[in-house]
Image (cartoon, rainbow, N blue to C red):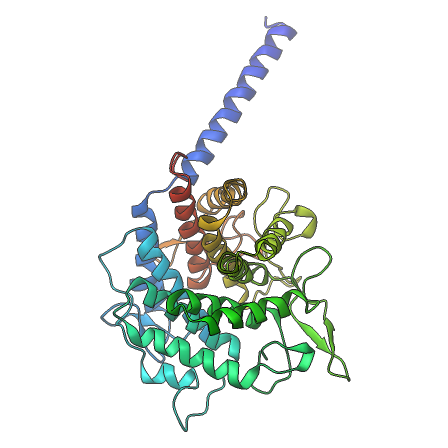
Length: 401
């Protein structure tokens, strides 16, 4: 007959075995190869992403019938293009083309660059495209039209949509009713990117003006997080509107500030950027779980709109821009955050619509309430995987994420 003591030992060893097995299974589930990621991307191009969406204005990812189909708002087209550009470089992919070196007339018209054409897109949408085009040019400097379109968008916004309301800043909408964080963060980041390409002082001056205005605009709250925008008072002064601290509002600004600080040899911009990142990583601020997994607001009715699933990806993309420029201590802190999120996300990837996809919630199975799976959620997850590659390059001694 088994004694109480021996039973306790058996129970103890069984518990250890069970925990070890669970840990091993979780680690196995979280491991992935470059081929796994390539299959993920390929599914977005020739699987669900092309087959299930009605064709709209075509912006080709690659030659053939599969394009960037207008299932979503214009800015999502831009961030997907930007994400795939980073993917090609991060994973050293050469077996498919995602650009043709020129900008279609239809897209130029939507960007407000064709005379006599009306366009309804906001300045944020235009700036997402301009930033993506600068990146495309940086990857292939023979594609001069990309750079020129980015400059044309920048010039148009600088000349028409920066004014003295709220003491400065760019209007989000063409009707000039709202000044928000994301539009001005994009404007700052585009200006410093253009400076890095063109080396013209005017871009650096504009980036500094945009950063100084943003840092003094009251949109950065007492927790070092950036709220959505400003409330305009009757005297045209402005206060923080207290709206959501979306993750992409915390991300896009990071590399704009860090690159500006590096260009000016001014530490205050780097310090501000790291304060924002550390605020995001603090569970008390509700942008990460207690386990450190990045989260976005989920409405009580679980109905997530088409835009929100892209926000975390945008945050991670711009974190990836900062990591090569950060101090060793800060870069390791950021990469620990990236690794934790990457492991969680990949362990919850799923087969959907005929191929691998990534969910909106990075720490839940695809089918739980409030989760969703789409091309947008998958591209957002791909931004995280791209940034994980940046960490591997910064700290090559670490094991593969």
